[in-house]
Image (spheres, helix red, strand yellow):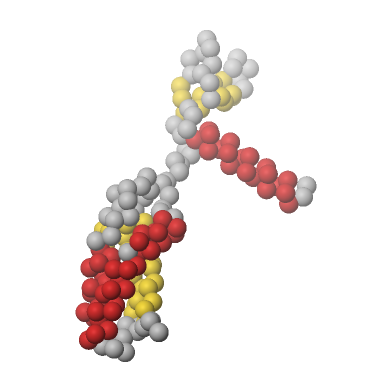
Length: 156
């Protein structure tokens, strides 16, 4: 078998196993003592569903594209904060990385400064306060934690 065949079989088995995870599985023993399994309840045989040992798939996290779209929407606000901070410190430039927890509701649950090359605590505090106000929109996802970098350079 070539690599493509293995990949196809693997995809098929994943599809089958995910379909089985949502169905009940029945087990029974016939008169000869052979155990049988099925996703359909056998007729004329008393069968009890087995407890599923397949873990349900957990919700996915928000995509990078969804997150980037929200930051792009608020880019102007963040840059205005930077321009105001440069009035106090004309040499201010650099970047910061933020750890951001986003709830399924879209609200920012928590934000922390992971690292910064910006030499202005008031400016990084303003950035965190502004990002805390972002709403990423409700989504059928789990709580998502990201590390998001932002870089500021003076306009030429």
